Length: 152
Picture 1 (cartoon, rainbow, N blue to C red):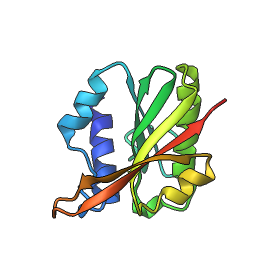
Picture 2 (picture 1 turned 135 degrees about the vertical axis):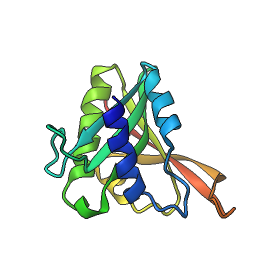
Picture 3 (picture 1 turned 120 degrees about the vertical axis):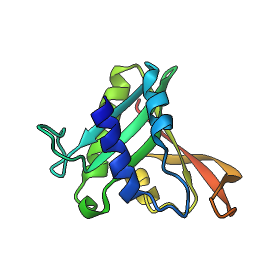
Picture 4 (picture 1 turned 90 degrees about the vertical axis):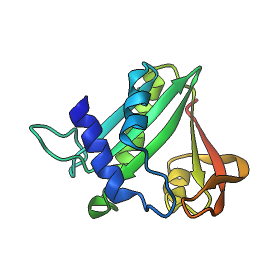
């Protein structure tokens, strides 16, 4: 698992803009994965699980709750964006969550996140808002939007 945490951190380092302070540190990722209700997946540049020391091009980290699964983090290395990797990760999440009994997927993102169009295109819809929920490292307050995707 340590190698996978290294892969997750490497993708986060290049994928998340530090201005928003969204990337997790090693301890946060490791602590999340210690509990049996957190799950992750890595993909290489071709959208498959990395093998034989291949680098990850993307990942997601999620948490299972009663009949729901929350997407905690998802990222794709900017060099591999617009190739369907995030969509593939979301489908992997959907399949895994359904197998774990989830009837709905949840996620929360900052207002203005460019991933919003992807989320809407794969079936997520806004269900709530938290005014000034996030605080950037520079002190700016940003709204959070909660999205859900029913899996029927």
